Length: 374
Image 1 (cartoon, one colour):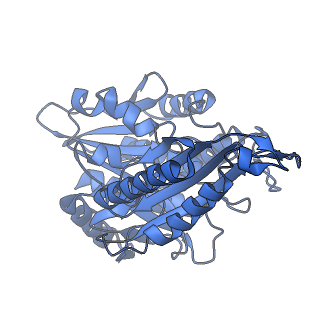
Image 2 (image 1 turned 180 degrees about the vertical axis):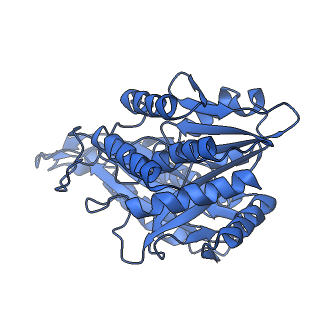
């Protein structure tokens, strides 16, 4: 990638960082990306309800290859002293989606300079990855079918790996997960007469202990995990025994079948607990992510692409524990997600100290271009 084009990608990344937007609110982000591609390339752009994509076609006889980037930021206040600090007090790019978009946009620049004439190329900019609804929305919009997408690729920047190195894995690349909210409704009473009410605190304690124990059962094919994120019982009223409580947690697994087993065990225990303690309960689920399962042919293409252009490629043994809604795409068509290392000591994702490293943008464009060309 020439120096001028790389500089424009870095500037785009900084502009997106400055205009960070939360999931489902990526309006300005879409405008910035659409304007950049139209000004710098001959790619066609299409703005849909909540997302945008660019494409360059060479004929119906050629394969349709898609590259996806997510656009949304996180509800973390920016406190870094950088020239392009987020102007949005409610959001900042602490997962690197600004960099993902800069790489995807950079691919359009590279193809503009070095045309690929035997493929139809689609560049998809997706909303709402952080809450797990963006990819599903696009799949339900029949984007893959309408454009007859044969293969789809994406990357995520990954701290803890050598800067600019490529990370790949066959089969499951990132875990499946979902948020769980258990609402426990008992009966308030005077704190002096707790026996007159039904306090859900003890049941909540039993459920929390169960969450720790249930992951240790010898019934799963691979790793499962429960993580408590919030517990709320009653009010700050020392004269009243609580009558309502909530336990919120994330369940996670390498395989969707194991997540289903874990979920069923939790539901069964909660029902049993409610009968024993005489309270009502309700369970709801949110932020649902499928497993991100890579196609072996697409992974081999990533490996070969790295070999062709001299990039270091590390194949990991276990999936990343975090989740990605890219898995909704790979349920419908062949595809793969890869990682690009931020650096061994780079701050972790979703932390106040994190910032996407500009020096991996070129590597991202290079590997995407090589995959598209093959």
